[in-house]
Length: 407
Ligand code: DWN
Ligand code: SAH
Figure 1 (cartoon, rainbow, N blue to C red):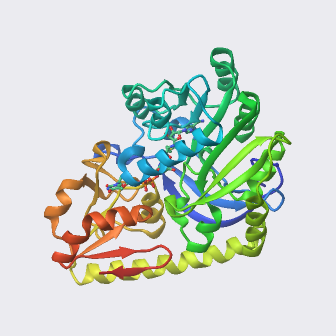
Figure 2 (cartoon, rainbow, N blue to C red; figure 1 turned 60 degrees about the horizontal axis):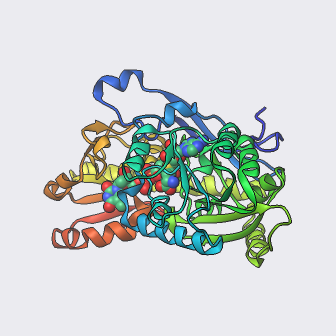
């Protein structure tokens, strides 16, 4: 029996994605033999409604000095976080002596905006290599995992925070009670805790099962976040939908009873009930859809292989580790994955062992088809590649929400 990480009730499994490696564990040939795998299954908690991984590797196996994801690889995301920061400065009337803490600041993509405005700030980032990039920009960073102990140390050193922020990080952390205890302590009486993560409503509707990988412990809803907040004398006071990462939700939390609650919260809770996110059957229907995508994509890739077509992929994303390993995609289907991240270059993708090459070589490769693994950045990437793809008759292959070939 597996117990819910939030409320300790018995959870109900609804998808088994098989044996999976570390999603960002790009590796050299000599490391193939010792590659780590875990069993990736997802479950729903009927009591607190939290969707969660059943098993997860230790945090040090995922977040360390060779973490392969650098946030600033997308210009669109830079602009998104600039706007996020501006909205927080306005909401909390932040001044130079205010304090903003960002949990999981990575290379500084969001917190750099507070630094540039001269606002007192602290980034918390355990992955040393990406934290170093943030530090080199002049940002104050502590290279540690956030938890209740770090919150207490921060209070002793810097005082309490006017705003605690986090993007695409909360869903990565299984020890949520330590995090929320830390937030409750670190947040000033009139402070706000604002975080955003991929939204389970979109994942279910778009069958975007590749948002499930080792790092993503939770797929949040307003229902489940409200339950969790309530366990720590906090409450959700606003929700705001974001188009980033295929559909995300931004949650604003405050100490219970301190701030007015926006109508958005009740409206979103109603939408979740309408979608059936409070019952197992919605998640079981999602599993059925994922199996259709698996069948359709493999049929297409096998057919293209038989026809001798050249198929490559774009974006060595964490998400693509789930797709390739669950579907059984190999270098026979996809010759290489191109990516702009230097640390991924001249290595192989986790589990499937597809070569990852520098983006610059993509333009020389003359493929027939390109599988868009970074589908969440489709607008940015398709605009950039439009002329090259069109003038050479190259087609995109998409698989979210269903499999299609795009001219
Ligand atoms: O939650 C997480 C999100 C925020 O980022 C982390 N756990 C890990 C990571 O997930 P991901 O790897 O699925 O993220 P992205 O943003 O979908 O990754 C895009 C990849 O594509 C990067 O490796 C960079 C690359 N890229 C590229 O080659 N050309 C991206 C863009 C926009 C491009 O134009
Ligand atoms: N906020 C960035 C980075 C997301 S990637 C963005 O939206 O692009 C997830 C990040 O969370 C990684 O950089 C990882 O090192 C960090 N992380 C994981 N556990 C953490 C914890 N307990 N405290 C702080 N950061 C954490």
